Image (cartoon, rainbow, N blue to C red; front, side):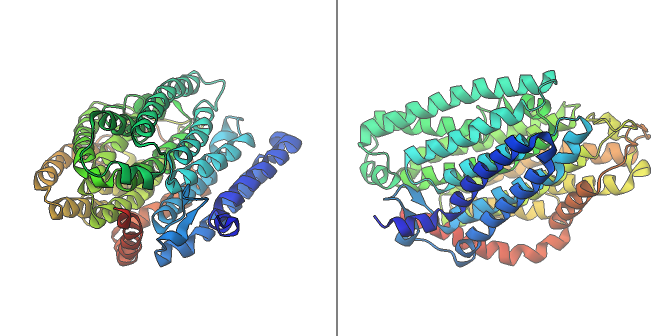
Length: 487
């Protein structure tokens, strides 16, 4: 084993690990006064990790040269593109979080450090090439996430969200571990490559149970139906910056990990896992769409929206082709931009006293009282609904094309029909903002950092975002090609 080469491949993880340790010391010595400095340095560390994975992403690196530590870790283009999204979403959270917590006098330097360690865990997740590496990365991310959900210690909703997330997350980890133990027992290895060789041919009943339990454990992490029950409560109760984080970076990591497990470890048994993925995709689309219709809280609505979008992303995975994997990455990138913008808009929903307001009814007449926020939010809602000419339309188009090319026409047709249901509650918000009588509730002023992030997100999902589609398509194709040759 060439340790020098292996260490060079895990350079982003080394940077984040060392940065996290140093920042912990700064936080311990500096106390709460060091919160701003720690946040800035965390953004620098994440930016450095982003830069380190860029050459791998833009060159489409793949093959044996990307394997580290005897097959435990794979630093290929697929992982690099996923890390791009993880690091970018984490930086966006750190940009908007201080102003939210400062109002509550709850900003502490532990928050950015927890984000950093969660990003480190997610980086390990998307590069995992072994069940042991998978679990280490997943739990590093999860342990940070449990604390982030309950970060507002004096807020009952935040404490409840943290407790629910911890209990259900522990259950999901148990299910995942049971599936991993069955997989190891029937294959004699924890390596994805070894599992792929061991399950070639007929899949016995024990191995089928192992595959099912592994996918069930991962389904919790991506909040796919029927393991979505925690999402609305946790999203509503957790601090809004944390909710934005949960809806973006961990979602990218869990979906990329699910794709790697399905394609690398069980690629020769695509017919077995495809049935599970198709069910989860369709159920998530329908439940996410129907569940959002009756919501009165914006954060709960966005929680069901995330469940709905996971369903569309899983359509790309169900295709099991290079085109499908590429479509999945494209959708993820656009989804991150749309979700970041939507939650920043929620952060800008404030009353005259500066306190957050989360009711959909409070958006009434927003176009007359705060037109800039109303137009940005309308663009984001239209994009989430997949209405042209916004970029969300292209995201849905590419996953449906991948399904059709993979001879999954029925899946594509049902997905298109179900997307019409989802469009209802997105357009409902636009209707409330532009056609209802002004409620006059949202009169608080926004912060510059929030407006900058919202503007960037809105521009990216607007028709101007189509200028990036040729480049994004090429990068996604190379990343998908680096994943699929392992079949």
